Image (tube, rainbow, N blue to C red):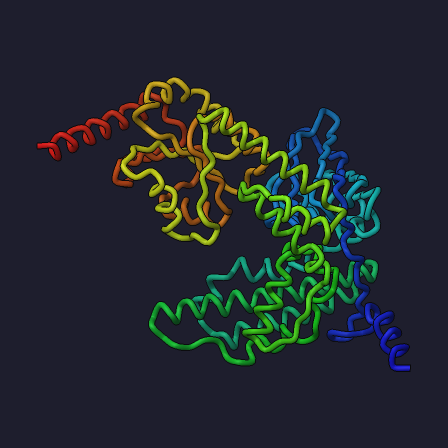
Length: 486
C-alpha cells in the first residue's frame, strides 16, 4: 500500500499546485545525442534598415557555459545554424543589437523560424515550425513583461541605485513585491501551462539570483571597510521556499548547468533543502570531459571509457572532439608560428593584465585586442604582416579576444595569425578593457620589457606609428642593457 501511494505521488507531482498555487507542468529531460540540431529560417525585413546577419547564443548544458554562432543572411533573408551540444538545448536568437527570442532545439531534428520584422505584433512576428514549435511559439508570443527574466533585467539596470543605498530591507521588500506581481502575470498569461510553468520556475530562479547578487555586493562593501557583518538571516526566506530547483524545466534556462552548484551553496549557506535535476548527475562525467577539451586537454582511454559507461549516447560526439583536438595539437607542432596560451578562469580585476603580460617577462610586446567578427581587426592584421616580419626576432605579438567570439571560429582563424593567442572569459575581457580603458576594437598596446604600457592606440594607427614606438622601446632596452654591463 505504501509503495502504491509513493508511486501515485510521483506520478501526480508535476501537476500539483505548489509554490503560490501555480500549477507546475514540468518539461521532459533533455534528449542526449551526438547528432547536431539544425535551426534555420527566414527574416522578413524592410530593406531600408536591413541587417545582413543573425547570431545565436547557445546555452550549453554539457559544455563550458555557452558559445555564440553567427550566420549571414542570403539575398532572401535565409539563415542556418548547426548546433552540436549533445542534448536538447536552449538558444537566444539575435538579429541586430538586442536579444530577439528564446527557443529550444532538438538533436537530429530541425527547428524553423520565420521572423517578420515588419510588425511588432508577437503573434504575427514569430512563426516557429519543426521541433518544439508549440513551446517556441508560445514562449516568443509571451509579452516581455511576463517573461522569466523581466524583473532581473529591470533591477539590473538600476543596480547601482539599489546597492549604493545599502538598504537591504527596502531592496528586499520592493523586489519581493515585484516578484509577486510577475508571478501573478505569468499565472494568467494566455499561453500553455508548460510555457507558464517554465517562466514561473525560471523567474523564481532569477529572483534567488537577484537576492544572492545583492547580498554578495553588500558583503564585499562591508569587508572593504573592515566590518564583520552580512545580510540578515531571513534575507533569503521567500527565495528558498519550495524545492523548485529540482524541475527539468530549469535546465533550459541560461543557468541550467549551474543548478547543482547553486543547490549546494543554498543548502550549505542559506539553510535550504534544494535538490536538482538528476540529468546533471547523469551527464557529470561528460561535462567534465567537455571542460577538459575546452581547456585544450586530451582525454585518455580511461576517461573516455568512464564517459561512455555513463552516457553512451555522447561517445561519438566526445570521441570525435577529442580526435579533433589531437589533430589541432599536431598542427600546432607542424606550425610553431602561433601558440595558444591560458590564464585561469578565476583570475579577475587588475590581475587579468598581469596574468597575460607576466608570461612574457623581459620582452617587448604589441598586444592586439580583437574579435573574430570584427572585420577592421582582420583587415589590420593583414596590413601588419610586413611589420611583424620586420620585428619578428625583437618583439612578441600577443592577441587577446573574448567570448563575444565563437571559440570554434577563433581556433580556425588563429593558425594564420602568427603570435601568442589568449581566449579569455567575458568577465576577464570587461575587467581588462576597463583597467586599460579600451572602449572599442581593434585596439593596440605597446608594452615594454618591464610590463609597462608605453603607448596605446584606439583603431589601427598604421605600421609606421607602431614601428616608431617599438624603435623607441628597443633603443631604451639596448641602452639599459649596455649600462648594466658597465
